[in-house]
Amino acid sequence: MQELLTPLQTSSLKDVFIERFENLILSGRLRIGQKLPSERELALQLGVSRPVVHKGLIDLEAKGLVTLTPRVGAVVNDYRREGSLALLNSLVSYQEGRLEPDLLKSLLDVRRLFEVETARLAARHREETHLNDLRDVIEKEGLSRRQDAVKLTALDFQFHHLLSLASGNQIYPLLINSFKQVYLNLAAQFFEDAVVVNTVHAFHRKMLTAVENRDETGAASVMEQMLVHGADHLQKLSSMK
Image 1: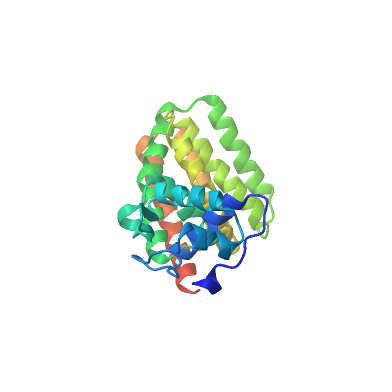
Image 2 (image 1 turned 90 degrees about the horizontal axis):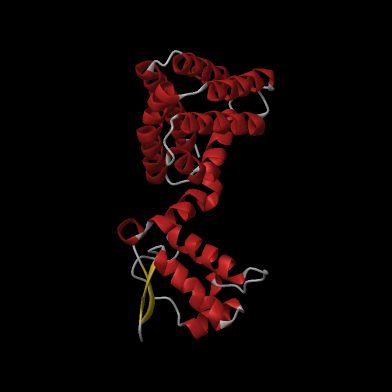
């Protein structure tokens, strides 16, 4: 245990404490059911005050990563059973988007579930301002270099976010934004393969046509095809690592 807990050095000690233990738990280096040292021992090993440790443990408990019991201390939970929505951001940010296969698949499944409906609603509720914004993104994609993965990734995220705004549903844009960091990390890997760029941009043009025509079934179908294509490619990339 002691070799894992080298002293923390930063101005935001509580946040780094939380990040350190999130990584130790999510990586499996701290095992389910393992009891952590006392707050006093953690403070000494990490070189921080006990209030930093105490506040950090409370946040970890709120996320479902540990259970705090009086006179017992902190015990590592199985986050899949005990985790709360507060843990979601930690999961999607973990290792800068390099996710374990089961978690990657779960996130892709969730995205497919709500983005297909987002596309359908966008075709129903879109306004001319939404169409102009989507056209602008597609134009910028056409002018971008195929090797500029960072720019292409940002434009791809913007395209999907604009669709969520066009849907008229106030929650879908928040869902897209909540996945932004992992979305950008994963899509950056995706767009490093210049071969897929033309395919994705062709999907975007088809989507714009369907939304323009208020073709709800067509928009949902294009989104389904687009997400299946992306998921298959990302899972291939993940299996090669």
